[in-house]
Image (cartoon, rainbow, N blue to C red; front, side):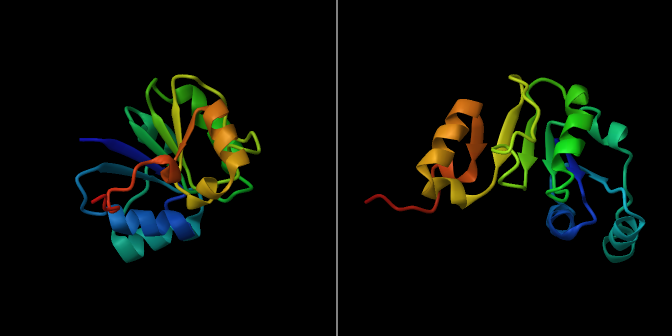
Amino acid sequence: MTAIALFGAGGKMGYRLAKNLKGSRFDVRHVEVSDVGKARLKNDLGIDCTPADAALDGAEVVILAVPDTAIGKVAAGIVDRLKPGTMVVALDAAAPFAGHLPKRDDLTYFVPTPAIRRSSTMRRICRRKRIISAASLPSSTSSRR
């Protein structure tokens, strides 16, 4: 079972992901630092939070659903604890371009945003920094007849 560490699980985007991933085939470990976020997860979804170290232990995917202003600090604080091959999903599309994600060649960064497709400069930066975006993946819904 794929283990996912969801950082910022009690915030706006993190809560939506936590709700959508509840009962899925994934082992989701919810990380939240705010008491309000923890209470929201517990009261609304029946989800208990996990300390960051425990959530990262064996995680194959790390989702950073934290505020834009915190993503660099959070990423820098966990990068040394990620095993090689881990995929880091950054919900802040600007983070990789602003240099907020630590460089480690054995990690894959994924930025789920269609905005990258519209900018040739962003596409060049993505290729240079080895960042995968949702916009660069083939569409499974497109029909080619």
